[in-house]
Image (cartoon, rainbow, N blue to C red):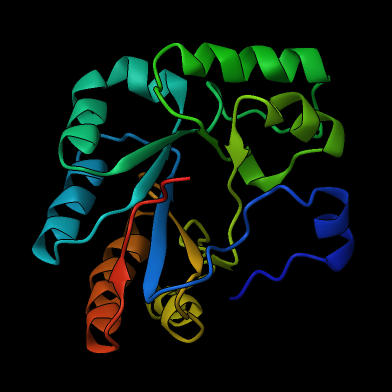
Length: 202
């Protein structure tokens, strides 16, 4: 499923990154980790294709599994801040939200930020803009959906992906059934079309 942000949302928050045009690269991203077994599996699959990705990590998971975070960085992938506790940006006041982001920043060394659920108000975006590039997406795999089949998850990506697209997967237990089917086939599809997965470096 291609995520097409409303034009009004882009006008309200023009500095958010929805895609990265130019070249033949695609930007695979993984939210909510690092997660034991799942993140290792993803790193192994990426290595098979010499692919790089961006992992938007939760601070609480980095604190619990620092060795996985260290492996992500050591293998040449990028990391981003995904808050400490996966809070919803529309449900918290700006100060509380910023505190949670800052708590994650204590263990995640990055100038990239992705709001959980893709929900962030213009006010919160302005509050974070001095420190972060806020990275959204234009293709979401929906790998977390229990109603979606693994084949459907794959179709959401390969049926739409083009150079410059930012694609969302999740390195979580909940998403593993669909993601573990879709990711290797996505990497094969990209290779066959002469595209590669690259880490986001902004």
